[in-house]
Length: 303
Image 1 (cartoon, helix red, strand yellow):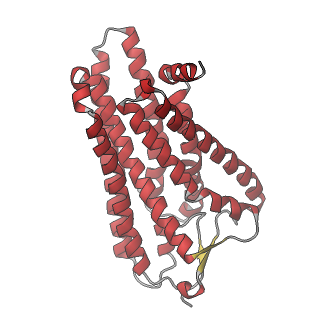
Image 2 (cartoon, rainbow, N blue to C red):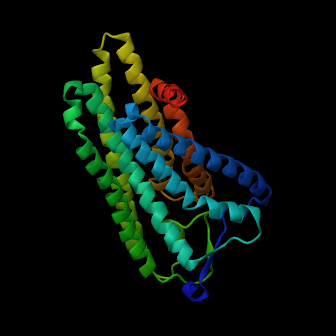
Image 3 (cartoon, rainbow, N blue to C red):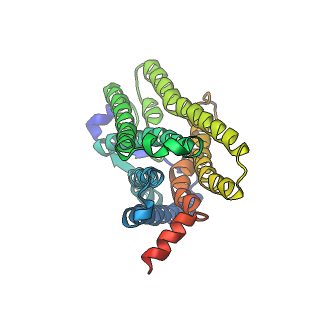
């Protein structure tokens, strides 16, 4: 039986642990509300306060908007599936979700790399920073991040649409993603899996290598600093970005760059739950808790 003729999929999600579904519903809802509140706060504050009209907060606003879109692309569907017995999603809805989840995930990988370059320019090239990170150039970098992610997703989504999905309707995940859908295919999908592995390596490993290279240069520059105030500022901004990079890249690498094993599917669901639900909610806290610029902006807005 062809899945497309029926017009729906069943997202199994966490059906193997029915006693956990109510707990997961509450946890996911709390983190989703934190994500919405925290990221909207950063976007609005960066827009309203002129002191935050800098490249760092421009890219941070892009990251916050990206996280809002990323979580909204699948969390409402996840909450519905966790709360009720019905766990279906339409074929069209699944393909739309597949496209946006993949596009926004790839965009975040590239955007985090661009943010590390901004920190490198600020610390290692302070006299040339305003020239290197000109507003027009920052806008072009942001556009390049979004275009690269959505272009890559368009290619993978197109090739996934071409694969005949036969047999049962059950997708062994809590959202529609390429590897889970390829498991439903009744033809050889090694070409799709190889292309997914290659592009995953490009969008994960290459940005990660460039990020580590940027912070290697920053570390060398920091060791030459003699100002305590400068050191604290560098560690404050760069440390926050490194923490965000770690929370995003480590789960992604564990999930997509490891060989498959017997228990990898169940483990992968919880790893994916962490980097798709928890990490976007922590990003605003990490960037704002010890940030003097943000605290100053809040005080100015409150009069």
